[in-house]
Amino acid sequence: MTSASSAKRIGGNNNNERSNREGLKGWLNPIKYGWERVSYWFQRLTGIFLLVYFIGHVYETSSLVNGPDAWAAMLEMTQTIGGHLFLILVIGASTFHSVNGIRLIFTHSGQGLGKPGRPDYPYDPASINNRQRSGLWIAFVLTAVAMLYGANVLFSGGE
Amino acid sequence: MNIFKRNKRKKLGKEISVKESNTSLSTTTSSSNQSSVKLRVFRINAIKDSNDVPHFDEFNVPVKRWTTVLDALLHAKSYQDSSIGIRYSCRMASCGSCGMKINGMPRLACYTKISDLNTNTITCEPLPNFPYIRDLVTDFSKFFEHHRSIMPFIQNKKADIENVNENSEFVQTPEDIDKFLQFSYCIRCGLCYSACPTVATDLKFPGPQALSQAYRYFADSRDTDKSNRLKVIDTNHGIWRCHFAGSCSNVCPKGVDPALGIQLLRSHLLGLSKNEKKVAKLQDRSITTATNYDSEQEGIV
Amino acid sequence: MVQMFFLVEESESQKMTAANIENNSKKKSNKNNRLSRITILRESQIMKIHYITGVGALFVVAVHIMMRLIMPYNMSLEYENVILNYKNIFYSLLLESILVLIAIHGFNGLRIILLELRQNEIWEKGVNILVILGLIGVIAYGTRTIIIANGLSMG
Image (cartoon, rainbow over all chains, first blue to last red; front, side, top):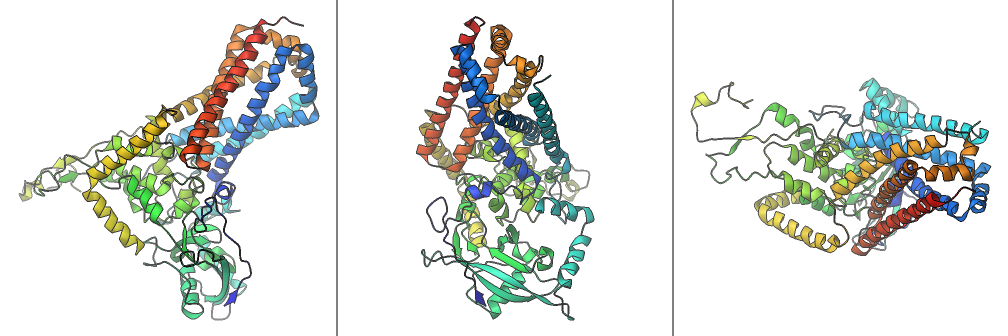
C-alpha cells in the first residue's frame, strides 16, 4: 500500500465537513451524463444570459424618450463590432433557448419518452432516446443557422 | 467523451464489453490472463475525527477479466489495509448497498467490471450528495427521509385489511402492472440521487428516486390517494425542480428510468396526460369455490 | 444494515398512515401559511404560467425581430423609423406583451435557479420579493418607454 500525497480539505456549501454536496460543481459538469445534461446546462446558461440582455435592452431602448441625440449616442455605443458580436450571441442564445424550450415542454408532458414496460438487460432507459434528443440536435443546428444569418444581416447592414 | 460511449454500447450490444475487456488487458496481460490495476480509494473518518483531512490511498490489486471493482476493493481490504470502509451485501446488483463514485461516475461496485473501465487506475470515491461516514460509506438518512415523505405504500380506503376474507383482493391485469412495474424495481442504491444536478444544491429536493417512487404508487391501480400524493410533490422544492437532465436514468443500474416516471407524473400535474388512472376493482374473497378461479374471470392471470 | 433499518421504518409508517398524512399536511400547512403572504399560487400553476409565457414570448419576439428585417437593418434603427413603430398601436401592444411575457418567464426562471441554490426561509422570502419587485420594475420601466415614445413627435 502506498499513501498518496493528494490530501485535500473538503469545503462544501454548508460549512459541514461531512456534507459532500457537489454544490455548483454539480451543475458545471455538462458532459459526463449524456446529451440531456448538455441541454440542461445550455438552457440554464442561455436563460440567465437572455435575462441579463433583456434588462439591458429595456434600459438601452429607453434612451428613445430623451430625444434623437440620446438615441444616436446609444446607437454609437451598441452598433460596433463588439456590439454586433454580442448581438450574434444573443441571437444564438434565444434560438437555442426557444427550440430547446419547446422540446422540454414536450418531454415535461411525457411526450416522446416512450412507455413504461418490463426492463431487461442491458437496462437501457426508454426516456433516453434519440427521438427526444433529436430536438436538442435540431436546436443546435437552428442556433448555428440563426447566428450565421444574424451575422450576415448585422455585418452587411441588411442590404 | 462519455456522451458517445453509451450509444456505442447500445449499438453493438453485449459484444462490445467483451471486445473492450480483451483489448484493455492485452497491454498488461501476463500468460495467465491476469494483470494488476492501481486502485485509488478515498479515505476519511468523518464521524470519529471531524478534522480528518480526506486523502486517497493507493493499492495495486491483481485483476482478471471478470474482476469487479468490489472484488478489487475487498482484495485490498483483505490483503493490504483492513481498515478500508466499504458497504456491500449481495454482490449481484440486487441490494444497492455498494454504490460509489468510480472514475467520476456513480456506479455499483459489484456491477462494474474493471475491464469495462478501460483504464489501469480506478478511483473509488463515496457517492456525491450523501454525507460522509467513513471512506466509501455514506449516510443515507436524508435519502430515506425523502423516500418516506412521498408515502411509499398503497393507500386504498375501501380495502379491508383487517378482515382478509372480504373485499381484500385487488383485480389487476398484466397491462395495469406494466404501468408501474419498472419503477418498482428500484433498489434504493442512491446512484440517481448522486447524479442529479438539482440534488447537488437543493437540500429540500426529494431526488429522482423518491419522485419516481411517487409515480410508482400514483400509477398503481390499487392506490386511490391521488390528491394527497400530488400535493406532497407540488411544492417549490418538489417535482418542478426536475429539469430533465436525464442523469438519473443514465446511471440507474436496474432500468428503473426515474426520469420517465417523473415526466409522466408531471404530465398528470399539468393535466396533459393521455393515460387516465384506472382504479382496480376489489375482489370479494368470501367466494371460495373453485369455479370462481377460472381463466375467464376478469383480471386473473 | 442501513437497508434493514429502512424496511423496519417502512412497516412502522404503514401502521401510522393517517397520522403521518395528518402530520405532513399540518407541517405543510404551517409552512404554507408562512409563505402564503408572498406565494399565493401553487408551484404547478406557476410552472404552467412559465410554459405559456415561454411559448407566447417566442411568437411575439419572432414578430419583433421580423420588423427589423422589413427594411435594411441600419435604416430600421434610425430614430424616425423607430418612433413610427411606437406610434403604431398594434406594435406598441406587441412590445408591451413582449415585456410582460419575457419579464414573467425570465424572472420566474431566475427565481427557480436561486431557490435551488440555497434553502432557508429568509433566502426564499428574499428571492420571492426580489423577483416580484424586479418583474414589476422592468415592466413599469418598459411601459413608461412605450407610453412616452408613443406620444413623441418625430425628429
